[in-house]
Structure formats: C-alpha cells, structure tokens
Length: 124
Image (cartoon, rainbow, N blue to C red; front, top):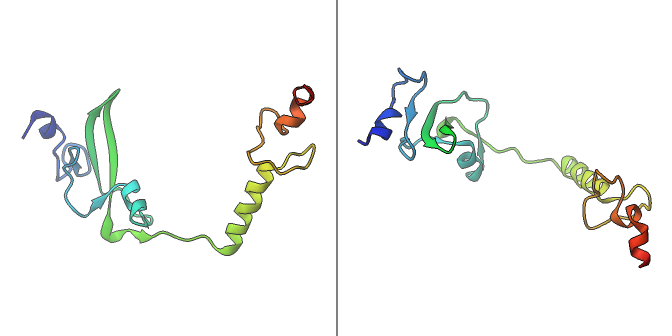
C-alpha cells in the first residue's frame, strides 16, 4: 500500500473519528451525495457514515460518505410546487417597467430589462 493511501486508511475510525478511506478506496455500500443523487436517492437524515480523504489543491480534501442501504428515495415536487416554481421563474423574466416577458432573466443590477435600461442604444 502506498504511503499516501496508508495515511488515509482508517477503516475502524480510531485516527479520524469515523471510518476513513483513500481516494477510490471505499468499500461497496457507501456513496457520496452526488452519487446518491445520480441514483435518485437522498441521505434521508442519516449521519455521515464514513469519509474519503485525499491530497488535493490547497491541502487535504474530504468527501463524506453515506450508507446506500439507509438512503431514502428522492422526493418529487407536487403539481402545486411545480406551478409555483414556474410562476417564480416567469416573474424573474418579466420587466417591471414595460411588463414584457423576456427570454432572459432580468439583471438585478439594472432592475429592468436591457431595452428599458439603455433606450438610447435601441434608437441608434
């Protein structure tokens, strides 16, 4: 086992407090949040079960692992929630000055659409 791998190998958690593995060295049955999301799962309130440590840019990097067998299925949005999200996104594209729905989000720095913020450029 390489020295770097040996430095991060602590499967019983005596050195780091929780079971710790090296990069790509975790046993099956553990997954990161992104891996759970890709499998349409979520941690479901379970605590961090283990971690992966590796040397990266700026020092030691950490990825927390959760048990796959305790993961819950992802929740889906209700039709009312989807409708509310659609209305909120439409409101972000609606100019408060000219009340036109634009194909882009209204810049918060301007507070209105680009055409209303810079009317002299349209005339040219």
